Length: 301
Ligand code: SF4
Ligand SMILES: [Zn+2]
Ligand SMILES: [Zn+2]
Image 1 (cartoon, rainbow, N blue to C red):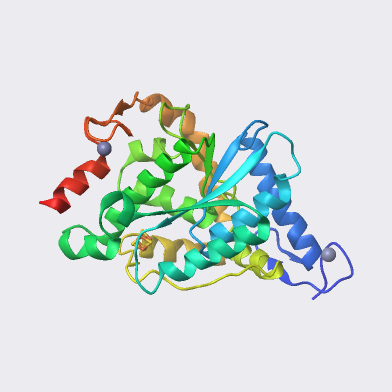
Image 2: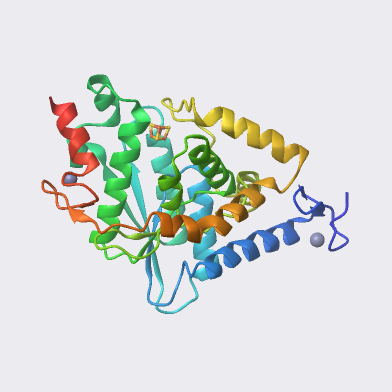
């Protein structure tokens, strides 16, 4: 199959645009769309010091590479990477190594922070004593550490590798769960004291495209799955959307666009509340005690 834009052989068939693309034109299209999202939401601006949440998995490794490639020439702009090591045996060690490798190759400042050092326990140890699901502890503690570390190291924004598939799933899940307030919070209304603004440069890029881009650029991509990953609620939504997208390409974009159209209404229904400082750890929280401190005291009991 020939590329729809030139005479070269195609390496990828882009279903949503119905076009075969060669390596050069695939890469061009991918990077153009990342820049489009970044510009649309003013994700990256001069004077920014951007922390990249780099787990060392395929998405965040590719994100780190792309951001450095597209934006490292701009003056007054800095990037650094944060890797959270939750302490998951036979899994996290490998991705931390990938994260270290890519940062070395890109000459990028890199910080690794460990659950063990901050919370006194690894995730493996936490799940042995805690009653909640591993992903609950992991999600809360990781978000907490990423925000705290990014802020303490002077970050103005925190870039995460959430892709179009993730976003479409989250939007649908919130609808299904009637959690409209959470849906409203998916895109923050303004900057909040103590909370580093999150940006998602891959929000309009399919997961499949991220993998292909990674391979085409010889990035160290690994497909190992976390041993705790079981997403009982998310999985059927993910499978449904995958099926729907296969039959009607581009529908994940439609979900995102519909969400963006109703966002102003969602924001006026649920105005962003001011955050307090947690009474125990001083991190930002809408409550008196933050979720991380609550979970920690529950585990310590
Ligand atoms: S699957 Fe769950 S436990 Fe594993 S890294 Fe992701 S959030 Fe953490
Ligand atoms: Zn081409
Ligand atoms: Zn706290």
